[in-house]
Length: 107
Length: 121
Image (cartoon, rainbow over all chains, first blue to last red; front, side, top):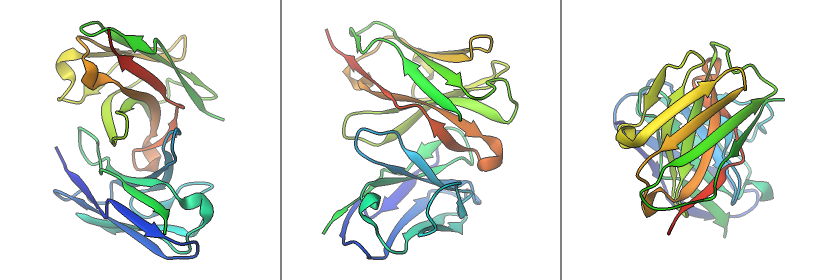
């Protein structure tokens, strides 16, 4: 199985901050990497697929980059509605695997 | 607008079989561009992918659960189902169904709201 490791596991930030979350795969996954946002009690929402493509309707303050084994999700200016947990996920091979999550909360 | 809705018992006894159904609306379940997934999340934990199924019945199961799993699809009802046998407390989780749309990098682009299943006597 491909292991996905996110860092940090949690971070505290303020509205307007630039936030970067990283995700590392245990082997190369090309660009088969997606990012999701999950709020308490809700299903995850797709933000980015193919490492850097913004999903329809997702604000442009979200961006993704990387290929191979190292990836990042950037929120350029954190908004109140962005406080949530973020997950990366690889779709390069089976079984599909997720990172452990990064919780973004108020500083 | 595509919607997925999970249904099934919220309480299952240990050693019994957990059975859930996901109903698809607003989309064709038989499109070759899509496949249909089960994902779960134990309380306070991360996401674990369980299995997927294509419209033609082809499946792939997470090896960690394979011996206890069976998923099926009924295209006429626009439903796919999960059966997980011999459950224990470790199977207590919110269970989500989700669609993968191939052109979106095989990402999970549509999710059901999730259904909480508790394994307890």
